[in-house]
Length: 61
Image (cartoon, rainbow, N blue to C red; front, side, top):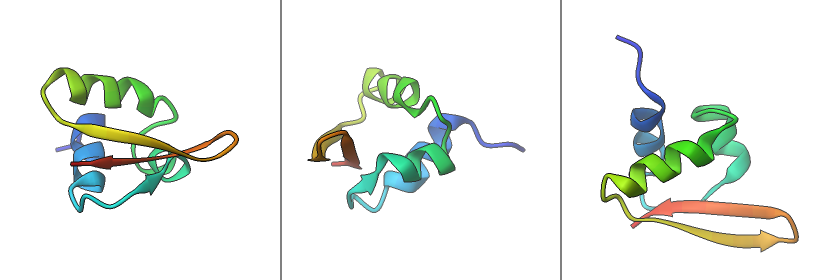
């Protein structure tokens, strides 16, 4: 059975380490922001931080 974007996102972030947006694009979808929003709406706590002018990282905590 094919995993949903939400399942792929949670599988990636479950280690609670920071992951760059580029990795989320590769592993989840180029529209991973919508999946992050969906996860937050379901009660998952996902943190975002800026690491450079236009670069971000995400983690589950």
